[in-house]
Length: 123
Image (cartoon, rainbow, N blue to C red; front, side, top):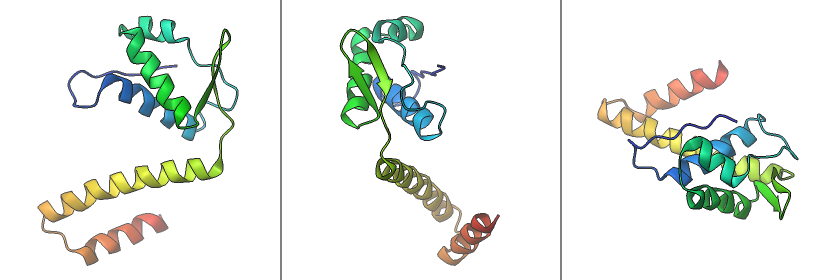
């Protein structure tokens, strides 16, 4: 499993790991029952603290994306369609917020944004 860590941005490393694993689950790259790398192995591969990796896995488990079996490891949890929908909605909202900010900076009207969205939606 490939994960990319950046020290340049303001996003904490554990949050980068959490976000990327969530994205892989939502995109279907990781499926129900798939094993995740052990906390220690992932920490070693990414050259980060075990505590940081543990925090990411705890956050993923709390959010219902993974389950951990003591002595066996962490696995992708059975996915709740509502959880997927909610995560997708959060991602869309974040992207739209960025688009709105760019439109405002560029002097683009709400009607122009609506028209563009409609065109993109229809393909």
